[in-house]
Length: 270
Image (cartoon, rainbow, N blue to C red):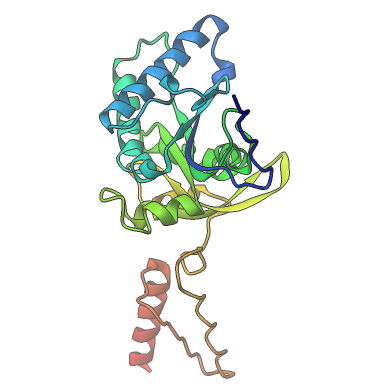
């Protein structure tokens, strides 16, 4: 019997869609309750996958990687869009239902998550795709977005890699979610100074602009990757004593609008 041919080390592995999840404040849960809380999260995720007609990675060899306070789930790349819509909204809804039924002695379950797609070798999980997925999960942007979720009674904050966003939301494959549900940001991790990538932040139930005040590294809509727009050129400086203002879009800021109206009234009275 001939031995199987070894793959060339320069061959690119097949692509996989990746979802990483992490429990907030898992290390602060009393040790005696850690296993139960983690099982509850696994049950919630498994049930939500069934609702979305997605395969359960725990039942497939090499498709599930336990990280202690979370996990990395691997899927066929063809289901990437469903990992964004409807999975994210339904996962947050399941966490909300859990909160309504939770015993007072049980910990609150809030999750950070990330979604990415890229080449990854199995079963050893070697490749940048898994590294980037975990760093998106651990990024300051995702952590800050979870604060937005808390303030809106939500339980989930998610970072999509730019390629995952382009293949799903931007491509029109997420009927329940549009670009306005996402906020462009730069993902950085405090202990990974060499990591810096564009991403899209999503908090179920909120629009991107509603999340913006919580993020340190939010991207301007005009300069977000894939926006197809360039920043507007700055208006020409007014001539000395001219008092000229130039606005190229509708003014929505109430403070600016108020000052403009005051100037109009003063000019009429002159």
